[in-house]
Image (spheres, rainbow, N blue to C red):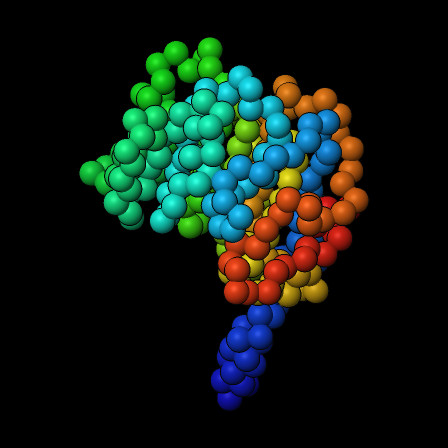
Length: 265
């Protein structure tokens, strides 16, 4: 009978976007939050892409960038189209959509980007290395919005390929489950791998879903994160205020999300 009522209470709390976990402490959750802390890296931010979902803030170090690898296309490609105006060509991949472009500099593969090759997927390293044979001499961007598949891909990316990237833009999913030990460790290991070579210069919560309170900390479900290769960082100073004036809601008709200060201070 006790377990029956526990399950009812748990479901009620979940319906109100409140989660409690026994195994991940508040201090551990704060440790993960701090892994997403953004910094002023000495470059102004510019908005690339549309005014809603699909637009991102990136550091204005694009002059020498030649290519963008975009995993997860969705229904629009405003980000890649804006990059074309800066003479940056894009390779796009997504098995879930049929993408048609008349522009020869937007090259699409109907494949998921994964850690392995199959009939409908491409190993992330093979995708990158096969597209540009002389990539060692090129600056490029990797952009990923692959509905939770980013953790698998980050784990699979070779450190050699990570070192080559100038900018990384990743939408991290399922952060509201950070209190689950398996999810917690997956997020933590992914971020620690990236932070060996990159600093975070911007974060922005996707407002498609309300925040979830996890052991007294508010977690967005999805968080857009822009990272810059440490080789291109000029300074590394704290950011005192978010959102940035260039930020826009991902979903027009939903309330925006304002991150609590512990996400960036």
